[in-house]
Amino acid sequence: MCDFYTLARWSDGEMTRRRRGSANGRQVLRAFACVVLPSLRILPAERASYERLIRARVRAVERARLLVRWSETGRFLVSDGWDCIRFISIASLGDWQRYREALDKAGAWDAIDRLVLARKTTIVLQAPTVSVR
Image (cartoon, rainbow, N blue to C red):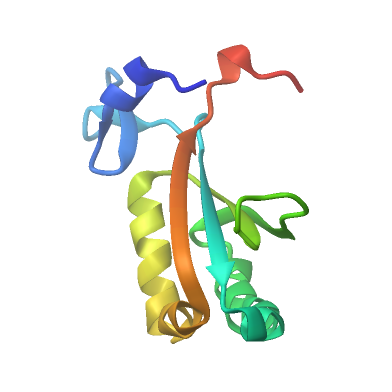
């Protein structure tokens, strides 16, 4: 479930609120996180290459921990033609853009694109009020 009121309050990739006495009058809230869910159809002969690429280039960018809180990669067991899904936790929509730019700079984004037949990306804002942990 998505908290639309919270989404409406995002600006410049950060969810903010006013705070009296702060230097710039706003405080960045990091309580909410986005989870990016890219589903991928990989060229059949390139599935092993995709996994090697994730291990060799993508994880290096993610390990820097500058933009990504955590990530997971999995293979679909049952799907409508999709092969892989990734779960990427980021703090903001702006961080997602910067993450993509970092992958592009590392040469990983184009390398992934060469192996992908189709991509479907969903970005979900966590709604803690309805989460069970």
